[in-house]
Image (cartoon, rainbow, N blue to C red; front, side):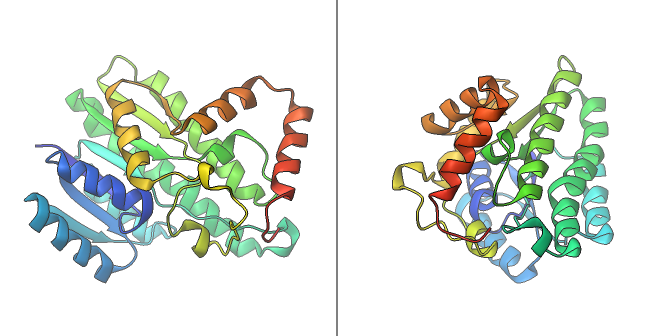
Length: 258
């Protein structure tokens, strides 16, 4: 029986992964900061799908929280989904250094640490997979959140590099890079997205299913939605100066802070 560990599992894309994997018959280890929400979700998934669900409350921006999850990964899982993350929109000089370092601890350091903890047992068994949730924001400089865009660029490159490194060893790695997705993320980041056109919004359940399908196909990168797929292709061939101009123009048309 497959066991999947999912971080940021109580809402949005993380909750969608939990639902999709439970529907496939996978046992789950759910990680998030809030124990009450974890217990509620675990109870619902057990009752609906008949799978085993562990809960592991942990703040992955802290050393202790990472260590708790690293220990569980050392026990062995078949799939790790690094979904937990946050954004700090605004002018860089107006944001506190502490909030920016907190973002990097969660978006970058936790991804590195948990991936590092999961891989040894996967390599030893010759099977396993890691999905690191990144963002299309990592393919271009961000005029609204420099550290967020940079952190997601790191996640994507890190994951694609490991995909190459472990090719042929039975261990698969996938970077999931969605665009605007209907989750709690934007409200938590205090980001006004009222100007984002409806066709640009993605459904979290479809994002999770697309990622699992792309993982099954052996891909290194999953970009849900035709519009975002085209944007990623263009970002990789577009001259840097033109890319900056396009991003600045697009972001200036959206309301919000920063």
